[in-house]
Length: 70
Image (cartoon, rainbow, N blue to C red):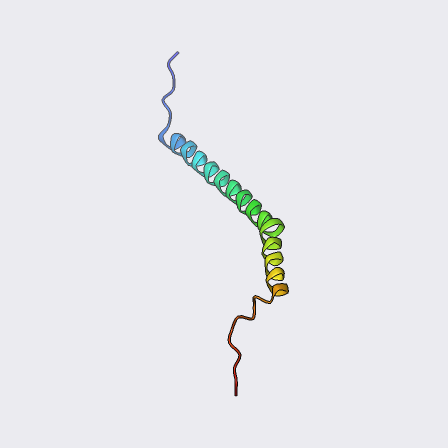
């Protein structure tokens, strides 16, 4: 038996489907990575910044500007 030659449209459809699946995969992976970065920011970085700001406020370092004298 001879193999039936692959139709050009069938080949292009399979390539297109593969490209679409790759784009969907990249989008899902990117969304996951962004979500993890946001979670890390909310749970680690922002509290550290708030603690550092509170420490500066307690030390009085926030008031370094010269006072206005009338």
